[in-house]
Length: 225
Image 1 (cartoon, one colour):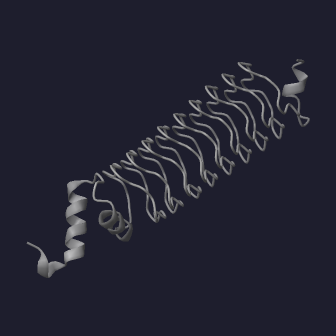
Image 2 (tube, helix red, strand yellow):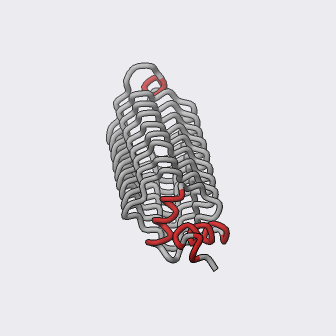
Image 3 (tube, one colour):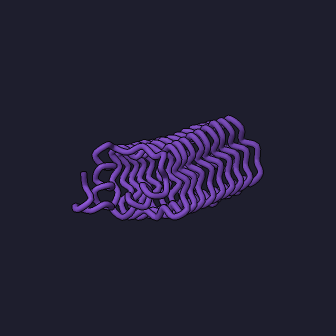
């Protein structure tokens, strides 16, 4: 394959191609059509894939650290064990994608669509998920330590065993979410959301001070011991 086909400014069409293990670090692939392409184990570190179509592409075990995927389409893509540390994933379509065991630590997922995506055991340490859609997303055992999730849609999400320590969950929509054994120690929540979680999920880890605060809020001053 000639380098000009993958690094030029023109729109590239490589749909369904087999690019297993290819090295494309720092390549310019903005708006490229890579739908269904096999990029398993590929090196795309720091590449520009903004607005690219990667629908149903196989990116498992690939290196996408610090890649630019702003407004890219990755619906139903395979990103199992993919390195996405520090990646720009703002306004990206990751609906129904497989991101299990992927590392998105420090990634920008502002207003990303992760509806129905699988993020089982994924790493999202310090990730920015403000405005993201996580409706029905599988976050079972996901690492969300210090993640930014204010006003995020987490309705019907699976957060069982998730690490949400020191995460910002203020105003997050948690209706119907599964939170058995989720770790919320040090997390930031509005009191009304904390009360809802406290009432619906008895096996959730809190700071002792938070649990006491909720009990006092619910019982009122006249019933405190």
